[in-house]
Length: 107
Image 1 (cartoon, rainbow, N blue to C red):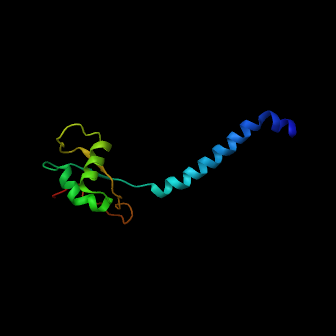
Image 2 (spheres, rainbow, N blue to C red):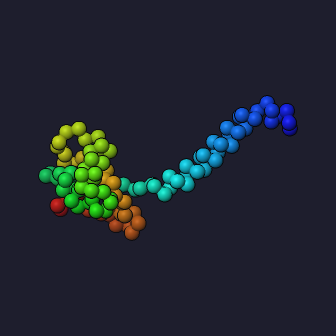
Image 3 (cartoon, rainbow, N blue to C red):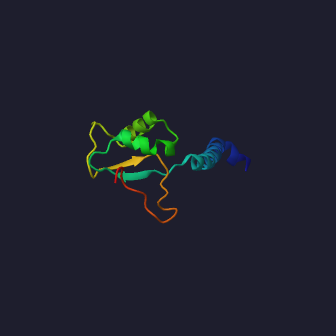
């Protein structure tokens, strides 16, 4: 056993540290995990209108909400196209109670 330890001590320590790190990261990522709501864009919808409607649910300011939506949905232009889908940084409750949330603003 002593020969095994002296030969592979660094490998054994690396494996133990890796396992402990994986367990630790597994527990911490569950606390920060957030479900996202996916909506379909209708004609005339704007990101700022979505921020008015949803920013309080996301615990973000309207500007932070708009910046998050633009960066996470890879929006490069100022226009939103009807039928396109956007992911919003709010919890999707549609599966918790068996009903779907409204898919767009202004319906």
